[in-house]
Length: 403
Ligand SMILES: NC(=O)c1ccc[n+]([C@@H]2O[C@H](COP(=O)([O-])OP(=O)(O)OC[C@H]3O[C@@H](n4cnc5c(N)ncnc54)[C@H](O)[C@@H]3O)[C@@H](O)[C@H]2O)c1
Image (cartoon, rainbow, N blue to C red; front, side, top):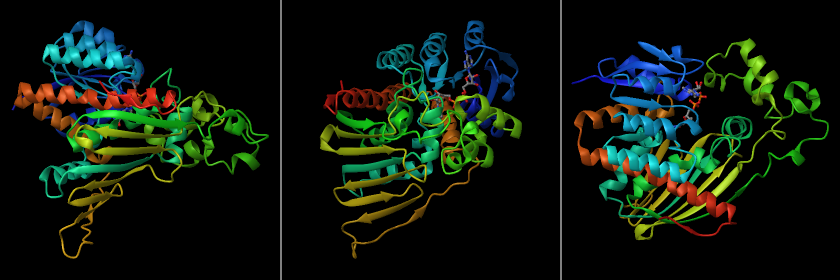
């Protein structure tokens, strides 16, 4: 089988996660070039550029371009790459605006190129098992789904209060940045289109007026009596604990100290540049009448997704790691079948990152034009729900129909 050649545009956390696949499967994938102004050489390749445009201007010989740059640098590079004949692994969101998302997918369909959007959850064993159960038909048809995305109090502070996705004008609305994964699952599981959406959400806590009296603008300057009781203290999150260090290429003690003294990540969570909600709820109606309610909240201990799917002949309940499946016609009725899907943390996202790359390789090797077109076209649907939900939230929960 032919080995695929890929270029990585953006050698940050996501670029490195996908590029790792080439290290473990050199017979399937080779990274031939990397563009990044700061850390291109963190991914082994034959050639490096400091900007995506310089790279694509040269039209290097490759099958696939991985676009793993910040949200605002997806649309234009995607169009240039597609028109130059490359297939794409494109990180979500396709773009922060609906018009640009449509333009990218329309361009891919016109050029007959594959676009695999970074909806990694559908490539995990846990969520794929739910899909297989639904598709088996044994439990009947999906009637309703209640799904909660527990974003984790620390994760929301890191990404959506202080970090890259805190301000929708600089990145994307949180419903797009965080929840397009979940909407992609609903579309995939139900196998129908979402028709109508309504949404509510706001910033409950991370507002200037909620700052404790006497606190400082930076955690390093905050009086210890306040700082030590604050679970969002930057020292607590980035220096005293190791959990978030993997997100930074240089995570030495000195670099983490500098991070909290000089960057956004050291700011008081009540004084950040954030404008995205810290909780948002979306309700949806799908073709055929199935309904879904999706709750995203930043006020949970764990960063996990829990799901209850009601079908006409059974129920699937998932706590994010185990599934309980109940068939109404079983005797006795209460027959939980706990399946443990805890996976080793070798590749992040429960194996989804690697499976997304291997599925892309499979589709390209097979070369079926229908599969390429369907995979590419479906990627847009989750984004359309996100944009409709955000329009609804800004209009006080008005029902928005999806075209
Ligand atoms: N699928 C998922 O679950 C998931 C998770 C996190 C992030 N994301 C998405 O992935 C994308 C990247 O996020 P990340 O966390 O890897 O960010 P990151 O900041 O770690 O990496 C982005 C990289 O792009 C580089 N870059 C910036 N401008 C560039 C240019 N002109 N040319 C080439 N490279 C350039 C930066 O130097 C940086 O190294 C974002 O769109 C984000 O929303 C997806």
